[in-house]
Amino acid sequence: MHEVELEDIELSPGIKPRILAVDDRPENLVTLRKLLGRVDAELISATSGNEALKLTLKHDFSLAIVDVQMPAMDGYELVELMRGNPRTRFLPVIIVSAVYSDDYHRIRGHRSGAVDFLPKPIIPEILLCKVEVFLDLHRQKMELQRLIGRLEEEVGQRRKAEESQVRLMAKLEGSNQELVDFAHIVSHDLKAPLRGIAGMVNLLLRDYSDRIDEKGQELIGSLVHNANRMQALIDGILEYSKIGHGGESRSVVELSEVVRRVMDLIVPLPHLTISIADDLPRVWGNRVRLQQVFQNLIGNAVKYIDKPEGEIRIGCVDAGEYWQFSVADNGVGVERHQFDRIFQIFQTLAPVGRSEGTGIGLTVVKKIIEKYGGKIWVESEVGVGSTFFFTLPKVEDRDSWR
Image 1 (tube, rainbow, N blue to C red):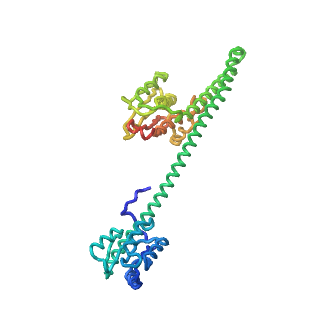
Image 2 (image 1 turned 45 degrees about the vertical axis):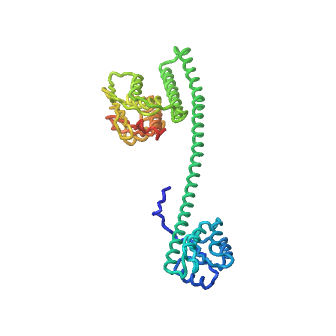
Image 3 (image 1 turned 60 degrees about the horizontal axis):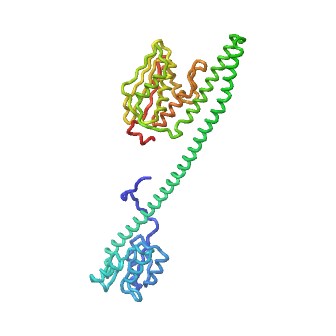
């Protein structure tokens, strides 16, 4: 909804305005009707104050032209009564008189509530100018009322939309919590048979290891491998479902410290060199979640390096309102048509059996980054290596993505 400036208003004629003419002499009303023949308005006449008051109950008028000298009720009394009626309280009234034209009566006319005073004989050009002014004001008033009505309607529609959005968000939060609860239940129910499988394998190895040939040992090893993989999948799904729920605490996090902790978890390999940019910045977030991001990206880099001399580079550049991070390696690389696929859940580029990956790690990373208001993407060349880029808002911008 935009703001409306007065100069932007296009006046529309709408319903033709009405003028109330009050004079006890019919010939004066005929003359007035002729004078106002050039005005785009409907003239309704009354020959007494009482008749005029009755007409104001039936019609909405834009202007009243009232003669002063009338029997039973003069023009001053009529205007005072109009001012006491809510329907005509703000109706502009021009008083005309052939007798009372001195300053005293002009002042009295204004005190009664009239907006103007014209002496008779009326000069047509002056009357027409004044009538046009009041009619233009009336048209502007009607147009403003129409615009206000339209704005109120838009505000009402927006309020309904906001209320609907609040209800939808509440429903969505409830659904999300149900999904989290469901993931916990499924995790528990799926882990139970896995524990049973592990127990039976242990019993089998303990009591029958001397009777199992090499092929049997291989099958048992495959069974253990698949059970472990299933366990990792369940843990990954549960971890993915938790992101963004449970009221995670956030604070200013020193990423240099986070990366150092990740490095402590990585098994040192003699052929691998890892370089880290000096003075990684501080960001606003959850320390555990940010550690997950770097642990997944660095872990993937280690896993897919196939060169005798492996190299991983962790960098950061200032990208305006964001910090842009990168984790680069000289590993196997990713084909261009796979760039989007690797961020989808359960998608892994290595065949099952060649990698312990579950296809959830990069999906978790993507969800964390986007939850914090950033984005993640990859640039890669097969046989040369990959660079994963992601952005995080700077600390001073945290209020916009809490």
